Length: 452
Image 1: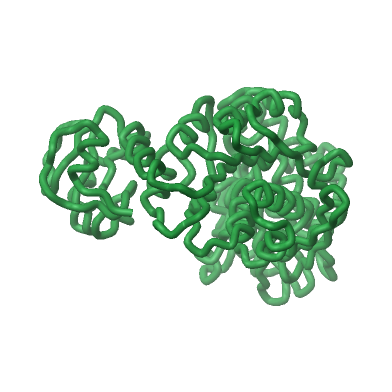
Image 2: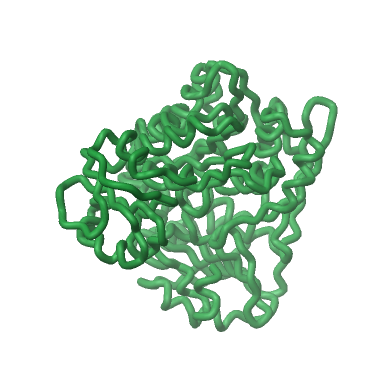
């Protein structure tokens, strides 16, 4: 997608800055590409206005700022970068005549996004890459729109109230998926009820002609139903789910799961990249949404086979014959418990080792949730527990207090765990699980860190 300087000035309500064309949006001077509009975001630790020259050196043709500063390229001065980006995205969205799906959830939204993107079989589909799922990242995604696309599959992140509503205000999804309702970001919102309310902003944004896909197993079904002004369907393991995972099996070495999904009187098989019951449930959500978007169910279930899960999310690698499960993109009580369950299930001729780091953004609930994960470890068949970080130390305490009989080690940094990973014997299985800020991938050999 391209926009002229005049088009951008008209959208933003700023003065004309001359002739030129913008081909993309940059949020970081280090990754700016030729033709980009560099947005000078002011964050907690950095002020983008101080990096304009670096962005221009990398090819930025214009900048969006919130104050008048020196710039070697044309400058659009706005009151809010967030609002300016939303205005640009809304104009681009208005040109798109295809179908738009918005996906949010406490966990699983990235997997559902990838599975659904595969299911719709559109090589030009607009899809949120990486973590471009925020008020700054999602407008950048819209700038990537290919005129040949028939579908847009957009991931929507949430850290507080009204954020999903803001993303929907310019993305205008007709289809919505809530992958799960858990406790991620409970530190900011205070309760699961508040989290559910915030996620339901997606459902409230859907048009009457739209369609919603929501979890049957996570509670709050009445709230989700009340939030929908359009038809909705459920997915999950519940007997009452419209799209029910009847059974599933995982090839633990290949890192793939086959989900058997029942809908009415028909059964569909979804063979997807990913591990455990969570992968099966996410596949059911993606299949249900794809069908609501008009894709044939058999075609969609088979097409999901092509989907690839990004690095850092339940990826399996092998070091000296030991299997390492790398799940270091994020961690919450639900996803950590699920990862532990997978570690329990994986066949192991040697030891099972859990290397767990902090679960962040839990606020006043942090101590309780970390202790509960420790209690979960004590009930498992895990042989050794390694905890990394100050908050994660409470996992070790919880395990000790609950009578865990295995070895426990307390570490401060991820790199301290590298000798442990390198020393695993053939046939052993280890899990790396932590929130992103812990950088637990540094426990891997240097050659594997970037791959994780």
